[in-house]
Image (cartoon, rainbow, N blue to C red):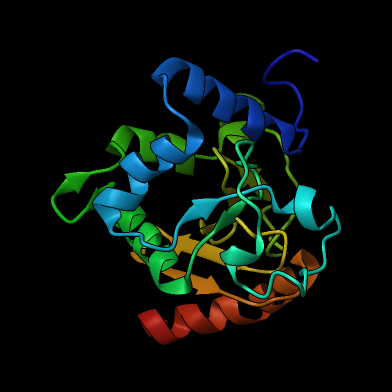
Length: 206
């Protein structure tokens, strides 16, 4: 299909993007993630592997993993789409980076322009596209940016994980939240839909 004419969600595009990043930089994906995110943000737990290849491609949390990266064999072929592992505290630092204009402490991790591109409803502005609800049932529909689902009713952006985790950002009110479970994406989405407005009210008093 022609660009900017239809929304098709998948995972292979992130592997292509990771390969392009390696080719352009002359670095491995691991080296890039360490230099750009882990070191400046103090993320001691962040890493990538290919969990789907090692523990099956199903979408139920693999009990044999148990939240322990040492259960995974080392891989030179990490999965940029669904291969990240990180503690909740370190993920919170990444969300905070998004809220602080791309800064981790005194280090610029991402530029404000890069963040604006990531957060924007790309398919909405390009061709009035519709992505379909993922983490929330939005009356205004759901848009999509650079890896973020955009709730057009609330303006919040989110990106749920394969095993049920759901982070979201409210850029207008300046906060982020991170729901962590060990289950599946459907259960995570259902729980997020139940608590997003409750969290919003608790934080903003609205």
